[in-house]
Image (cartoon, rainbow, N blue to C red; front, side):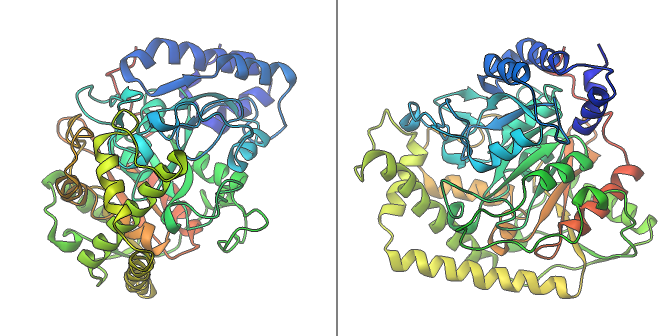
Length: 473
């Protein structure tokens, strides 16, 4: 058997095409690692080993990831015949009759779905802890959270269970765990990947789907495999000029990059996060880019208020959909979700419309900054990976929770409001060995620029060989 963890997803598929390994062997390698390592991590909450074996036995499509094991997040995306719980006891018996379109596209790319990963309830928290599935731990240090809400996906990829995994992002939920677990995580442009057939848009336009991965090229190739609308989608992203995989090795040219050492709204930044930005700015400068300190002018407080209202209204809607409009029982949803939903219930339709208009206004101010700069470099997060329990899911104090939220991710959620693509890159590690991600954002529709730049930085500062030790082996 080849060294499974020495290859990314495209690398494993290439081995299979050359006959150096078989699809059953790849699947068995993933299953063995899940069985050995997942008990310490709790990243995979629904193993689908039998279904995966059946898919391999029936023959796989000849896609770019043929035979590569893959995991789907337990939020938004449905896998036929399995529960789609949204991480909530309220939906614990919600069995999907069919695959979501993104899952169908994963299958057509040749991926073998071997399980589903942990998510906090309704994807609300930037950690991955729920009363339904329990706590997911960070492979780099077991007392720390892997981030969220795609923390199960990120922990699984960082621990070597699979080379890439499905993730979603409504306020940073791809980029947060990518930063906390030392991975590459791109949030695509709004509507880049269809939310259908179940929905027209995610979280009032804030949320998108994609993956976390160990390599830039896997992310690009998976976006090639899944991007595009379904008929009837309310809006679409502009199509790329060529495959994103072709951008990864392309010369980005001389870019004008702004960087931030201060956070919007005056949120304090941990010195390690500032050091990560300084280091990345110096690296970009050494590669020939024009780099200067600058930040966009937008009202962070107004954006945060609108963001909170949108989250509250959508949480209420998610609960009402299952209860028929009634308030949930205490044993059905977590205290924080119930309190946030109650806040949403008090909002009028006009309040939500006003909140969406406010987000769009601030999103336009943010986007205007990119008329002067090709990319904006920031810390992905304001703090290094946080201890488990920092975000208390048993608390009903929404004000305290939201204050902690904004103190952790001041740089991620603005790009959910503007719809622009943004990616977290694992270019820096703290003195105590923890990954500290940096974020690059670009103009709406310009994932190509981010893939060219990320590919260049990956070659200049390779991270693929950096592996965690906790929860592995």
